[in-house]
Amino acid sequence: MNAIRAMSFGGAAAAPQPGGLAAGQAQPLGLDLSVIGKRYGDFVALDDVSLRVKPGEFLTLLGPSGSGKTTLLMTIAGFVRPEAGSVRLGDQEMVRLPPHERGIGMMFQNYALFPHMDVAQNIAYPLRLRKVGAAESARMVAEALSLVQLEGFDRRRIDALSGGQKQRVALARATVFRPRLLLMDEPLSALDKKLREQMQIELRRLHETLRMTTICVTHDQREALTMSDRVAVMRAGRLVQIGTPDELYERPADAFVADFIGESVLLPIHVAAGRALFGDTELRLRERLQDGPHVLVVRPERLALGTSSCASDPALNVFHGLVASRIYEGESALLHVDIGEGRQLRLRRLLGAGSQQPLPARGEAVTLTLHRNDTIVVPGP
Image (tube, rainbow, N blue to C red):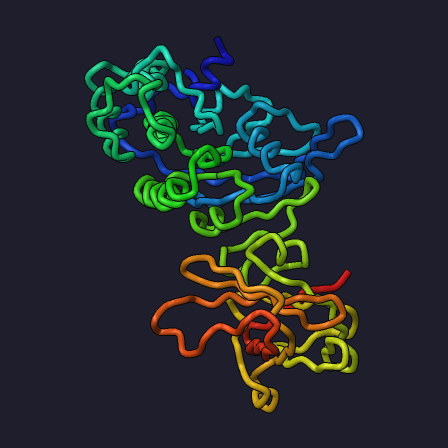
């Protein structure tokens, strides 16, 4: 029974507070994780992870498969017991509490909807566990359906819903009792690209309406940048960098973050006596660097087509090469440009009537420019 209740986003632990659930949204709580450790045999899944999530914040755990993000989420939910560390929600230590006593809303990757219940019954299940009265439950279910834009679907069977509709029902069920913390495990992974992009905006809108403290797991960096207040990038069980989407994109901590957040080409450079050199070419940077090896991060959308005269512009870095391929992508085109020594840069150009110059053909010699303010450099290996 506890397992069922745990699946039902909070179980019976959270009996109605004074004023009851009808009193509305409780104040969101912050979450503090301190030196969380988890091993599976010799494999280190979580390596002394510490993290603070602010009350009402939308934070995304982002990383490749095996980075530890889902293990960390399951630790917060109570499905994984860490060998070391602390999990505090507000002032309460949660490590030893079973999932059904944590009062946390959770949305699973496969939605975990009950097929024998209709939409309204699925959404009302957490309220039933909390012994909310029928009239109040009906009101809260109707409100949840309105929030996820599924009015009129209350008696619909689960097997009659589309993937996007099931996702909305699962979200409504996870939030109907207004938990102070909402966890989401790859909530959009089952949707097609167009619907996934629409739901990213919907999830952000819902978060701004409810102001729940929310932690989401994804491997999709665009999804993380679109929805989150902050993003925590994980690798090999560790937190590599935490910051706002623009901080991670504009100032990545290292080559891994630079490569994982957005599209980029990484070029080795060396700094000596304050001069940054790519081969024999001196780069113009936005800040002074310490001497030693570094990596230049070149974003395709930050490159522009120029002319040989651009080399005299002190604000521009210039690369010369030959167009290896030209790929049409609908709203834009992607050029692959060989710049010598087996290296390529990628340039993305928006297409349309406003384009000021035609795209070069395959094999054509081109000059690429990168403004010094768009020149990102991270520590080298």
